[in-house]
Length: 231
Image (cartoon, rainbow, N blue to C red; front, side, top):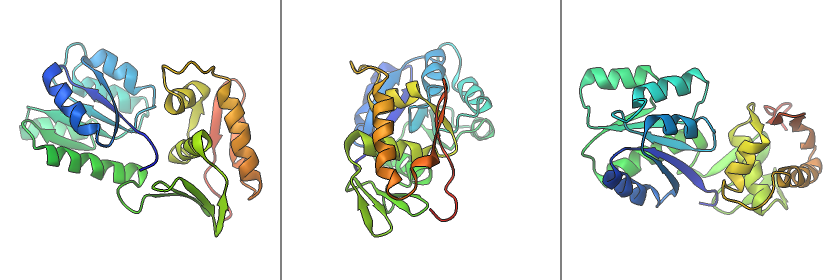
């Protein structure tokens, strides 16, 4: 799998958190936080592909985090992981916007299965591993970009940028969100690198008439419009 999946793990039990991180690390990068307030702050950054969320947390509990996240129209998949296995708790979780619910204790294989199922629904991963945008296809296992039968020379960070835009088509992405997702919080590169790579990506897409599909919103960020006219 070519793209880096980013998980946010919100669990206050440090030992359990370490165990879950070890499991999820098979699939991608895991950021750990141990309380609800920081969990919500991280979740609202929109740089994560999936959130594993405990209910009983210091500060805001998991239900509050989930409710505020959905109220802010953040659609990242959320898997609730908790010892509260009663039906009312499960119902409340789903009513507040959870995508799945797994009770403790759990089997390693079951956690991986649930996570893969959510990523398959949200990103098209663990399926045929292809992201489509009109006639444009990103093959996630080979890092290739095809437009019909034509292979476009989009590689490296430009490829990651294109994948991120397609995953969030129709959604405004700030430069900060893009930078954090592609280059990482700890990168020593400056924010201006986003403009450079966006310009390069547009040049590659211009060949197939898709460069104008990426809109620049001055002082805000970028928006990949929904595909139209079969392009």
